[in-house]
Length: 183
Image (cartoon, rainbow, N blue to C red):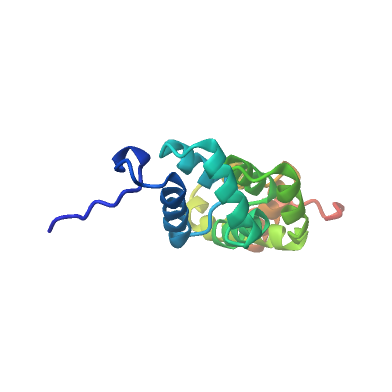
């Protein structure tokens, strides 16, 4: 079956094609699959050879009408990545910044994250991983589980506390819990 070629690159166009209509097509195609940040779309337009003035004008217009909304993107990204992968604020912040979301938008979106939900996400990650560390000695299990949580952006205090509590709940590390320690 032949694939029909669409003029989405400026170099593929004939002399009569308008760069603005091509840029509009690129933006709509990109936004059809999933929401994207303004920076991602600007990069895509630049890679396709769209002049900066045309790209800026269209990005402004798409933002104005609500087709591009970095704040909504950040909110949705946080909800999805926190519930799906158990990521903590630090990891979420790094991902959003890599996607080109501005710092103030990232901070505002992360302010909505419930600290208890973050701890609960860490607990769920540890519970899922417990079976694979049952045969290991306590210190190795703690190190591996804490390392996993650290890679997900959880701080060392939260990671160690959650790991200790979950190991104790499974009867794997009763001697690791300090009864005088306040959590």
